[in-house]
Image (cartoon, rainbow over all chains, first blue to last red; front, side, top):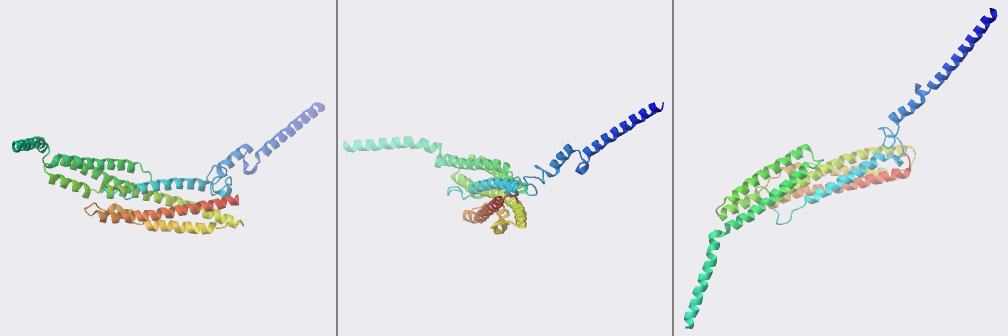
Length: 102
Length: 234
């Protein structure tokens, strides 16, 4: 009888130890900075502070994929060149009409 | 005999001449029909120009709503007036009437001398305003980037001087255009073509100066941008 109790106790102890080990592993997996699972953390970072966002690369406030951080300035200057071309066209068409056009 | 022959020839010539000339005078006494045809064609040319301008105005994305409304009012009014004048010309029975219509076509509308410059220069000025806004935004961004690069210990070269020149050019462009388009749009047609031309030239000259300023400011911006690119990451 004593032997049966001892075996049962040993099995329970072993189960408890295994259970504790599993819990430890799960917590370790979840205890990343910010309390997020690793995969989710990468997505969150990309959305709030990474490439393609208001604060990220390609803008003047953030990243550095463009040398000097001039990414959005480049596109704006391209836009300005286009507007200046249209401005010149309209101004030239608004020049003095021929003498016979009164 | 020779005298009789000559007399006969003279009489015959006179009869022929009278026979040719008489129907012409009967069809268009004093050339009224021809005058009406010429004036009508001139009105049609103006109407075609006005319709083209209406298309241009309605397709100008940078034109402010206020300017678009003002220009469409001018163009619509002129189309209505000239269309009525065209009908009036068709009903004229005297050369004096046709001449008065021709004077009205020019002096009451000034389509080429005034309306077309109003449309084109106003569209151009609003494009200039858009360029000005974009350049101010670019200037702010470049100023921040240059300051950051300088704080990081990098040699920004002439970037600060370029930005100062950019600022001055933008201020000049803004100042030179102040009130010019409002004044242009307020010019009314009339018989004194030279006076109209002089007033339109004020707006035209201001726009030319502003264009030159905006172009120089753009060159400055590109220069600063290139300097920053040469520095690598900021």
